[in-house]
Length: 391
Image 1 (cartoon, one colour):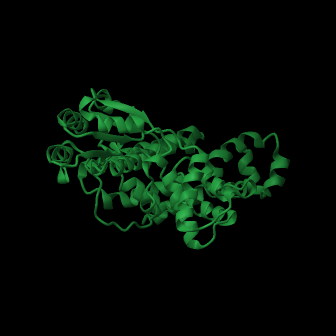
Image 2: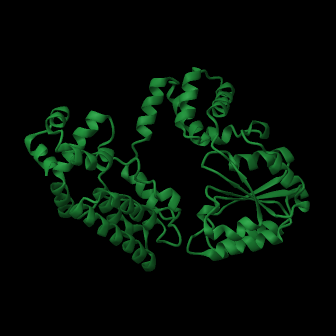
Image 3: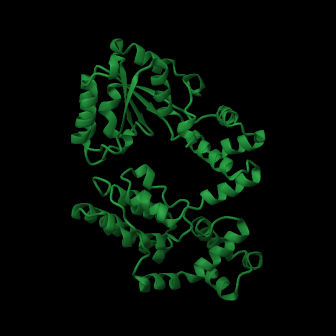
């Protein structure tokens, strides 16, 4: 992977690293014994710590908080790291990555980490996407906070170009800038996309467009992994954003496969409680057309289901389509007209049918009565479809 092959040196990190370097080199003088790097995914938090360790010749002990989520696990892993001397006594940095992954229901994990920070003889660096969650109060008081802002397009373009130079490849500057712009500030994601394009042998705008369209239409299987395998609400809540499926179908997929992953009865009960609440909102949407409730449905069937479990399963599970075909068929029949119209909206506006269904159709119903002829012609609606909109 190019992300690992082309790890940046400290001088190529697009952030001010002086405070981080000072924290590590003068650790014994620091009043606060931990450093908390926070910012969006792909902004270089972890890469900076790796680069600093290499430059200073320090051993790096990396612990992912998403894997060690409760008090007992954190005490064991971090406790061993702060007590053991480094290899060849050259000193070390303890990196605790993704602290947002610490179980929300186990505040003991955060408390254990805060206590271990006070005991450490080695610099501890934490990373987080969002450090302002209330459960992190005790960590923030013991840590210096440094924000990693979204990487600017110019800096990202330079980083991508350095990789191309090392790989002895060429691409137009506009391709690099477009790739950087579309990454949304996620340099790690941009590097992965660059490698994909290079391996395909086409570093052109057209190939970039093709890649972008393909990657932004995830399968329901990928979404299920994010929901059922993760315990991080930030990961789960966006799982369905790029899935071109009706929310009702996604609901049935989750309902069908949830028992395969959730073997603990308490976890399964909490997950079904989240689905039950989502189903209540779905009913209100159907009865009263309260489309604003769709946001609640999405949160409950994604983040609600994901955080229902205390620990993610490591076993391999094969997901399958819902077996309740009759219910699926009835739902499809009930919303057939709505789906047909949404598909025509999607074709006319060049968006996904799911987006048209959720974001455009509710407003179209409101304005249709005053613009029936024009909208019917523009969307090439059948008589029955026009009648449905006019209700």
